[in-house]
Image (cartoon, rainbow, N blue to C red; front, side, top):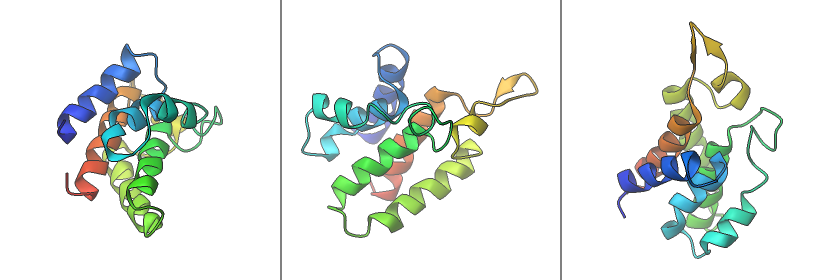
Length: 129
């Protein structure tokens, strides 16, 4: 599956697959890990609604960071996650769930579906997929 297909899968997992944002991203990027879908669902379950319902860091971004940590085997992960975060902020307008869900001029800054799509696409760009 190419990265665009993975991004679309993340959107589908979020909208109709019963996944939270973090789960949608980790499961969509499962091929980048050596974990099963079930393991990814479990490990990312608590990172929805902005870092476990705190409305802080977006769960989609956390999911991409988790997979990045597995991809890099923990070596240089901070640099990679910083790149992902910076690009995510540029595209989505924030990295915080509460701000992403703020309604301005009658619309949300960045809907969850776009957050998961962007997190997967940005992950792919950073890793050259």
